[in-house]
Image 1 (cartoon, helix red, strand yellow):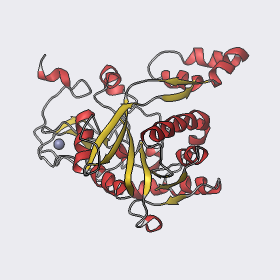
Image 2 (cartoon, rainbow, N blue to C red; image 1 turned 60 degrees about the vertical axis):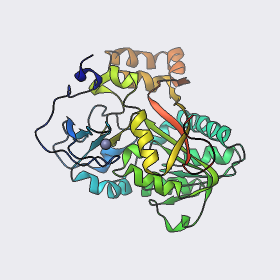
Image 3 (cartoon, rainbow, N blue to C red; image 1 turned 90 degrees about the vertical axis):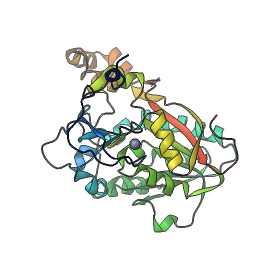
Image 4 (tube, rainbow, N blue to C red; image 1 turned 120 degrees about the vertical axis):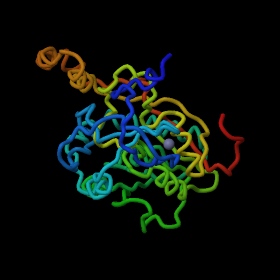
Amino acid sequence: MGMGMEMGIGMGGECSAEAGPVCWICGAGGATLWRERALDRPLRAEDLRITDAGYGRTLRLWRCGECGFIFADGDDLARLEALYGELDDPEYDAGGEARARQMRWLIDLARRARPQARTLLDVGAASGLLVDAAAAAGLDAEGIEPSRSLAAGAQGRGLRVHHGVLPHPALAGRRFDLVALVDVIEHVADPVGLLREAAAHLAPGGALLVVTPDIGSRAARLMGGRWWHLRLAHVGYFNASTLDAALRAAGLRREAGRRARWFFPVGYLAERLERYLPIAGLNRLARRLPLVAGAYRRVIPLDLGDSFVWIAAPAGEGGDGDG
Ligand SMILES: [Zn+2]
């Protein structure tokens, strides 16, 4: 196997003459250019929508020669927090039932890891679906969300979702049995710092639930530059070893791990597949046939195998290292 093979995605492993930025995980300098920027203008809030279908469009990405972490650079990073503040996502609630099922699945998983858990904090709570699922499962749950509009939407439905980022005055000194970071660490320019902030809210014996895409997954390798997790909103890309390194840098250890199961309405899948297959005409036809239209509304579980679902705990606590 040649060295170029293992990269798989995008750039074909060419080195850049430009001195790369310092790695966010291991601190090594001299990362190599991995993927060119797909935007010829500054990043905007609407580029960050959860429902954005612009797969394969990213900021400029670099790959650390030391640990393999892939990460963005540029002026946009300093504006991320402000952009998330402005973000609204009118289509997001349309995916409600499928996303809600996924949230229930995640809550089940977290509760199996900590059966005695009574409280949960969801970091990056969006419109509050995980908080809602946790509350329905009997947990005393709250969340924190940088988007003013998503946080307000959650509050409007009676959910305790604070607007802002960690550290947050409403959460100062408070500890939770479970802290969730579901599809969050790939959105921030300091994932280790965020993991550390989140871990600071863990009660003794508590656990962190971390979900993030796996750029080392088979799906990522097969789909190359068109992988659905390559998107403008994702500024850091983890594989098993860099996620492990990020946890350790934040004073955490991996306790258990598996792959995410996603839930999708069939119609959503069919629509998204238009990006990859010539089925747009078929989809239009299908929506006009009552039987198929009904099938398109069904929600099905899908094990794509390309996101991590890890349970982590403070490195100093219990256990005996990685299992
Ligand atoms: Zn590194």
